[in-house]
Amino acid sequence: MNSSAVLRRQKLLKLIKNLHIFHPWCPKHKTLQNPCAQIQDPSRVFGVSQYSTQSTKFPEYQMPSVTWGVVQGKKEKLVNRVKICDYLKTLGIIPDELENLELPSTVEVMSERVQFLQKLGLTIDDINEYPLMLGCSVRKNMIPVLGYLEKVGIPKLKLGEFVKNYPQVLHTSVVVELAPVIKFLRGLDVEKQDIGYVLQKYPELLGFKLEGTMSTSVAYLVSIGVSPRDIGPMVTQYPYFLGMRVGTVIKPLVDYLVSLGLPKKILARMLEKRAYIVGYDLEETVKLNVDCLISFGIRREAIASVIAQYPQILGLPLKAKLSSQQYFFNLKLKIDPDGFACIIEKMPQIASLNQHVIMKPIEFLLGRGLPLEDVAIMVMKCPQLVALRVELMKKSYYYFKSEMGRPVKELVEFPEYFTYSLECRIKPRYTKLQSKGIRCSLNWFLNCSDQRFEERLQGDYIESESLGPSFCMGGKLELPGSDVVSDEEDESDDEVLYRRTVSL
Image (cartoon, rainbow, N blue to C red; front, side, top):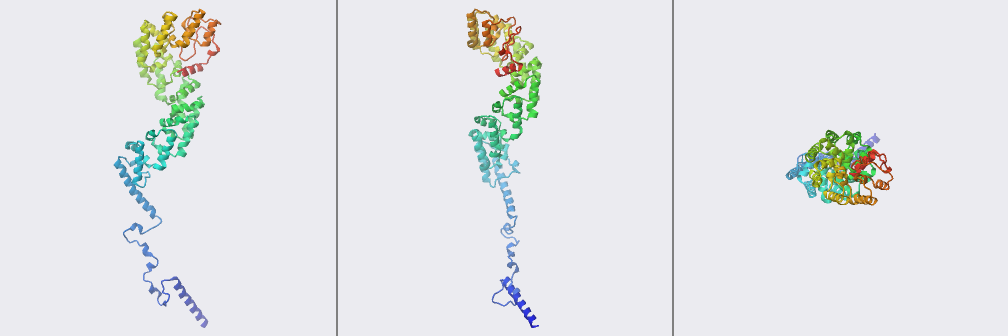
């Protein structure tokens, strides 16, 4: 019994000792007769008063938690958004489109953005056209982008106009989006000094994906015969074709022109020189103009030649122009519709020629005593007469009369005489004829190559002069009644069209 009592006593003392250790509020030098009496306010022991939900002067700081900072951020953002929107309204900027856009933290930052854009030259109206530009940071977006654009060739004074035309550029990344496009353009052989010009002409290029429309349009043009070396100059002249879809825009136009009789080789040469042709609307412009040409009497088989000589005719308001010119030629020269159609086939540029310019050569010929009927015949034979400079015609005419002493009727038979250079062709060849004592028609010694002329002087063969060669601007000569053709002039139809295209 005694041993069990001792054991219980030891356990009791150990328990009292532990209570003293874990409850420091118990006095060290007092007996623990009533330990609980020493606790005046249990809530204070565990600091519960620190987390009281009772209202105080700053209730939002009373209950810190994991979400406290987020709640406070939302409140601040909401307040600042209202302030910024009110600020923009005072400037005349409509902030409706900024509803889902992250705005800066303070009015001062937004004011800095507005002032920066205004210094560039943008007006409040310009900002209202695309208010999303206000979401771009001055230091993170605007300055790096504009600095890069200036570096690649856009003049500093033109940056404001560039941003006005394509404000989306402010959202782009220089490294990820802008630099690859510039590298792509350089790879197409666009000259470095032309990059700025190309971008100002078509700033939307900076928003295209390299592996998309730009690559496919270039690949297709090369596939139909366009020289890769000419792609760069084409981009400089007309960069818009880089944004055109092959399947819906470029290919249908090419297929239609080929169906008219234009070989792809010739079409490729045309596009190299005049890339803007691919911008003509097929349904609204090209097809209507082809139908218009046919309605004015141009033969269907001559359409390809007309287009090759004057590709711009596909994009003109053609009906109005042809109607005006047809009436003019009938009024001034009594040329009927069939004669006018013949003129257009030989020189389609007549459709765009100013009537005041046309009248000067006509008045010169009438002033030399030629009858109106003869002048009309001369114009139908050689429409290029109406585009010549009167000063050059005068010199050629006086040489014809004073030195050559020929009758004027030879000019009616061969009006092409006025189209040749007096110093480079007429005088030298006529001098050689004189030294040889050869008497021949104008077309025999003028309307041939230098090689053919030398062959004729040597008398290797004699050609009939009954019909004479026909004149076609830029094309090879057709010699009716003669089967003798030198190797130089034995060319394919494609080459003939090519020469017409290049000569114009």
